[in-house]
Length: 275
Ligand SMILES: Nc1ncnc2c1ncn2[C@@H]1O[C@H](COP(=O)(O)OP(=O)(O)OP(=O)(O)O)[C@@H](O)[C@H]1O
Ligand SMILES: [Mg+2]
Image (cartoon, rainbow, N blue to C red; front, side, top):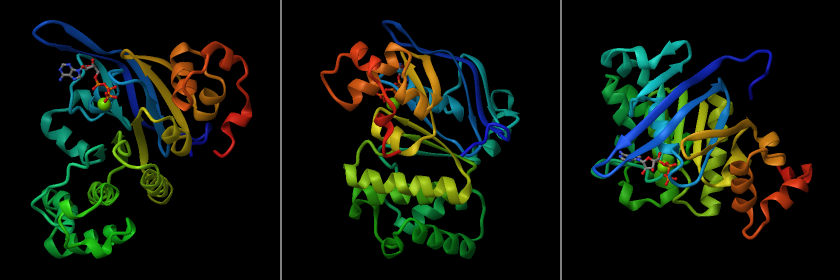
């Protein structure tokens, strides 16, 4: 985890705005969003459906280009790069999704090999590395299976192995556990924590599940209607949420039928037991 006196910025989002125009109206998906993720963080972004979370994460690797504002990865401004330079920088950023996005016609092993093919790594080398990665995610015996033969949790492990094949510095996870049952979610979160610790990969986690943030992240930002309402350490924000948006997510997200203002007054450290 990051140390206040010795931090290096992994991602910096500066005054990013993004709107979508449809036939009938304009949606302001992100409004002047700014925050930084330090190297080694597991950084959570929480918000209700439609808050702008996926748009934000897609802006971070410029899958979606902001209308205004800047994105930095390390010291490099992504928003100032040519398409070719951007392709190179993007290899440092891996992404995993709710629905795994594996290639159905390829075996597990060949899914993991795929990014290395794009990077031009020789066949023997990529096979060896893919087998190592499958072993690291506990799926050696499924190397020759096809995605449709795997459970959701196993498919997400393959997706994680595949993303690691390109040696990313940053991993962006958009609702990576939302399609999984609680037990499988736990095992994927443990795997992500292990990747963060062992490989030093900075992780950004987009989720609407408070338990995921509580278990996995050291920092969190609360997004509502495209605006950042509150950011801080998970401990700070979860024990003493200051804004209505954060209180609504944290208290109501953990138990229904709670009076937000009353609950906020009685917040105490015991809430964070088990972290
Ligand atoms: N390509 C698009 N065209 C038009 N509107 C869009 C587009 N992408 C997103 N939006 C709108 O922008 C807003 C933010 O969407 P986004 O997908 O970022 O939300 P989200 O927080 O990820 O929601 P969820 O939790 O449901 O995934 C929504 O109102 C959405 O309808
Ligand atoms: Mg989304």
